[in-house]
Structure formats: C-alpha cells, structure tokens
Image 1: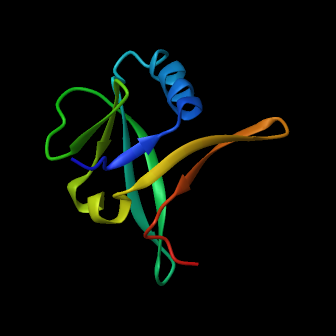
Image 2 (image 1 turned 60 degrees about the vertical axis):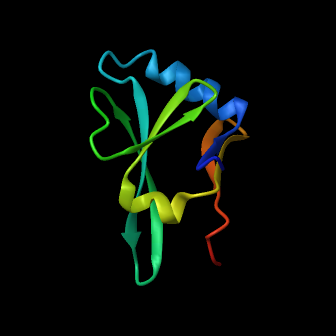
Amino acid sequence: MERVLEVTPRAAAHIRRHLATQPAGTALRLGIRRTGCSGYAYTLDYAGGEAGDDHVADCDGLAIRIGRDALPVLAGTTVDLVRDGLNEKFVFQNPHARG
C-alpha cells in the first residue's frame, strides 16, 4: 500500500521532541484550510485520544492524523524540517501543489 505521507527523520525527531512536552498530545494532526481565492495552507496541531474520522498515518512509529477531507490534497506529501539561520520551519513537498 502506498504511503499517504512521508516524514523525514529530521522532521520526525522535531515532532517527537515537541509531543514529549504535551501531556495530552500523542500525535500530530495535519490538515489544510482554504486561503485566498484558490489556495490552501497547512495546519498543524497536537492531537490526543481517539482519532475519530481521521486517517492515521504511521510514519516510522510516529502517528500523524489527517482529516479525511484533507487526504486527497495531502496524499503523497513529504514533510521536512529545514533550518535557515536560527529559524526552523516545516517544508511541505506536495505533488498536488501548483504554483
């Protein structure tokens, strides 16, 4: 079965460190929201408890929850963590992104 989501080792380590500081956070929830006329922005949040209607992607033992409505947009995405000077940020390489 094809992986819905790929998380690089650097991004996974960063997520694990932050989840360890959240008593109720057992997973990361990745979603999308509409921005502007024709675009999307990625949303990240801590998730705990039941997954509900979320798809749970196992990325090397790291649980990433994805809302069912976001699956078609996020399928095949790779999440990486890049450092730029003193700043770190997640970068999403999404095969469905245009422009």
